[in-house]
Amino acid sequence: MAIENGNPFFKLEDFRNLEFSIEGTNLTSQVPILKGSSRLIELLDAGICIDVPAKSCSDGHLLSLHVAVKKPVGTDFETVKTQVTGVVSIEDRDSNDRQLVKILFRQYSVEEWNSFLKELAGKQTRANRMIRKTRR
Image (tube, rainbow, N blue to C red; front, side):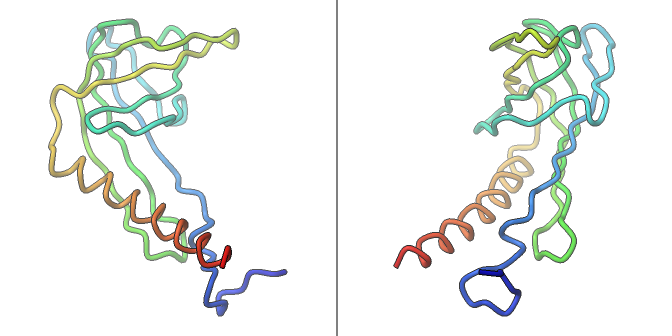
C-alpha cells in the first residue's frame, strides 16, 4: 500500500527523520565538538546523551553545545535550537573509538529546553495517534 498525502490516516511528514545538529566546545580541554561528529542518543529532562569521538571529552569536563533540530522539508515541524553548558559523565566506550556520554546541564534556558522537548514530543504524539488509528 502506497502512502499518499491525501490519506486521512497517514501523513508523510510523520515518517520523515528529524535532523539533529550538535556542535560546540569542550571548555575544559578547548577541543571542538564538530558538527556531524556526535550523534544524539537520548533527551533527558535537563540533559542529553550523545555518542562522541572517544578522546573528545572525559568525566567531569564542561561542554558548551548548540543543539538544533532542523525542520524537514514539507512539514509543519518548527526548527528548534538551544544553547547549553553541561558536565560530562562517561556512560560507555566501544571498540570503534566512540563513547556514550551523558551531559547534565548546568547553564541553560529552562524555557527554551522545555520548548525543545515539547516540539519533539508533539511529533512523537502525532505518530502514536497514527499507529493507534491503524490498529483499529
